[in-house]
Length: 104
Image (cartoon, rainbow, N blue to C red; front, side):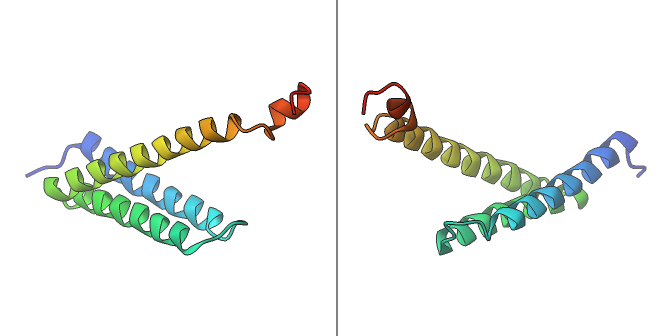
């Protein structure tokens, strides 16, 4: 069976994307505020990303779907927490906008 060149392009792109994700997360890991929870979250994100990339390379649809769904769920969860945290923080009286407008 001959492989499709477009499919090969997407397979390579998935590996490159996960590789750069790995580099970015390793860059942010030792930043100030480091906690073990950050290490665990980054490890899970990278594991799921590499599982998806392995599914793309070896044409294993179950691995590919597991990686894609896992990344989506982790991203949605992370986005939701970020939105909730930013809304809660901005409503505090010591926020930077309150200091600028003299409301503090």
